[in-house]
Image (cartoon, rainbow, N blue to C red; front, top):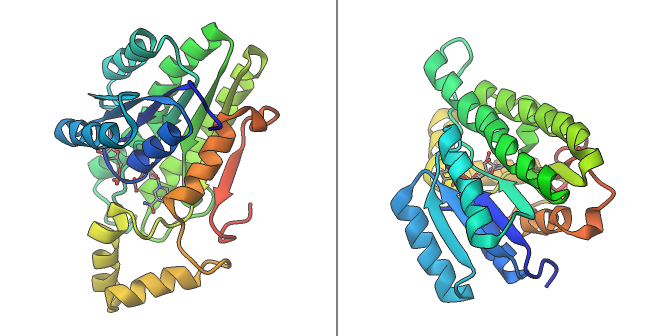
Length: 261
Ligand SMILES: NC(=O)c1ccc[n+]([C@@H]2O[C@H](COP(=O)([O-])OP(=O)(O)OC[C@H]3O[C@@H](n4cnc5c(N)ncnc54)[C@H](O)[C@@H]3O)[C@@H](O)[C@H]2O)c1
């Protein structure tokens, strides 16, 4: 176990990558508090994780765009866990569309969750970590945080902004013993986002079958496969651990070589 008794919060923990990262941090010995806007789903995820890993996990409803919710989340981490060693800011949304036709309120919504939500999480988690003089804040970003994404201007802009936020916060926190980094995964082709939404949309828009769409995205990866939850979990565990104690302000690609900057 690399993170025995570390206290962790994960946002967007009800499903997908957040759920998988919760299982991984529990396996590494963490005590975990999950947060998500989906109240019923977060309760179901906590039940499932308790059945597998025991009582070291709890969950609560929290909308990362609402300051009072995030403050209450961090307060609960202090009450339940006694402090906070790791904050994984994973909650995110994707709404796509051509920039010339994009509904501005939808564009703003993506920025609100993916960028403003990240800032609000930093505001409260980093304030606590600064008082503790320890902690690792890990932002889940994307390869779209480093390279424009076709018909995905809102998502890419929000993720580019996230890296600016990480670098700036890392500078503020460095002298206080708190590290701030980002992970930029490639396409998680087995995630609900792809399986329930993107394969269908891209197949329709590009006149391909869903299997052809999957192959197309695999063919873009030098290492020849999609990104997995385990690939991302390995880097999150590294960034949360003392093994990365000389790293802050970084945005690490986990893309099979698809992104190299
Ligand atoms: N799926 C991919 O291919 C992929 C690739 C790179 C990066 N990412 C990033 O990984 C993260 C997780 O993505 P995912 O694929 O698991 O998506 P997902 O949609 O399956 O899960 C996201 C979770 O965030 C929650 N959420 C949304 N808005 C919220 C809010 N305002 N407050 C709290 N929770 C909220 C959702 O309810 C959901 O449970 C995102 O930041 C995403 O940008 C995903």
